[in-house]
Image 1 (cartoon, rainbow, N blue to C red):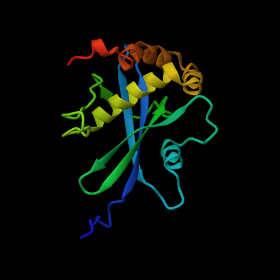
Image 2 (cartoon, rainbow, N blue to C red):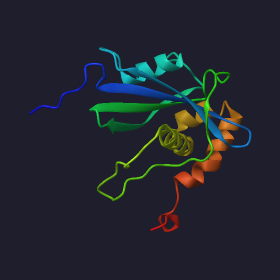
Image 3 (cartoon, rainbow, N blue to C red):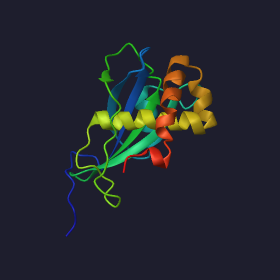
Image 4 (cartoon, one colour):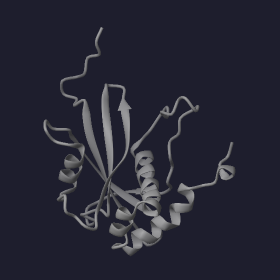
Length: 165
């Protein structure tokens, strides 16, 4: 027996989360999605959704996660930072809450929503800010974002003894 996928549901979709930081350290995001087109890479779809070219020197486009939907779809998530259109309405992230699996061999959370995915994307960028020279160089062009991410870096690299059992 083969799995059937609804013809209206693309098997792979790209989700972009355009991220912005506020002066008080809170994050907001805008979310856009599109199907992966024939001959189009996920990176190209993410840039298209964000309205960016491949030569953007100070905007980071980075794949941060993927998830499986019960309908048989894979969603590839990209963080775009900073938001290329910060004047557009965005959803606020009051806290950065990462969804977690229930056991070491069951990494998929029982429930995951966009705020969990956006929180993971912000934390992922904080990790990259601390470990990836290309990302760091781009984000240093945005002092507020760089400062806010640097403030999160200790959370992304917690020592094992600091993690609750």
